[in-house]
Length: 348
View (cartoon, one colour):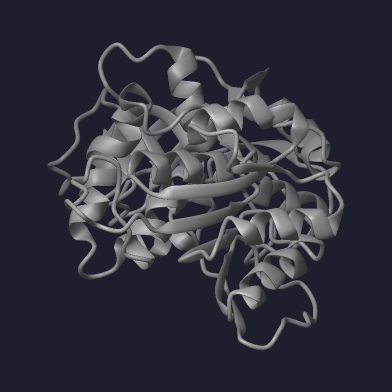
């Protein structure tokens, strides 16, 4: 039986439906899903209709772990019974690939399929399901798109230590980015809420480079400017409140590119010389020339990154069953979570 949580119309609650178990084509995998990581973008799609899905009915979901139940006739890399982590590529079309169901197909050519290490426990598996979407964007942005070192790369003797500003270091994407860059040997400055300050300082290895984002606006800008100039500036929050702030920091050092994690949802008045840049950052991993980086992400960074200290998990709240998904999405859309990540457990 294949149970699925389906969005049948804009802003409607997700409802449970029984669907046929899909059959993999020659190059596809059929996965029995155990854990589903719920992502913020899915709450926005389901509860705000922004961005809209390709069509209705729609099965959301991109991040999950499970066991291979069947393989296509031309599949040679995987075997039935393998435990894997999957992060569906942005833009993949077809409800059979949506994670909010018991049985999911992995699209032919999908590269973000990670074998889970032997002995990984449920908590570690849940942590990966919760962070995998952002964790693929981090190397995609910094190493794939910006050409920066990755953790484990050798720093050349005498090489100048570049300065990087990550606005929003206590967010999920932000904390992964801070840790990635710190482990790669960069000089990182970031911001944090007071509640997460201790954790972010531990990740960055310094109290002096973490600024309280609840300070008055002009004080935040002054504190960030004095620690610059920056070679790279990224706004991990990317709202109407944070874009002007990060833009002013860039403007003060003569302008440049502001990398963001959301598109502009309305007109923006950016300072002269500041260019706002957004794309699905994991896309760079799929580009020609980045094959080695993709192999490292799938074979080393994702399965062993926590073990090596290159990434750390946020607190995970587990919920039971697909019937819980709609409530979780509603809570996320209302801003509930306090730094938690939500994972749906379907059982084995």
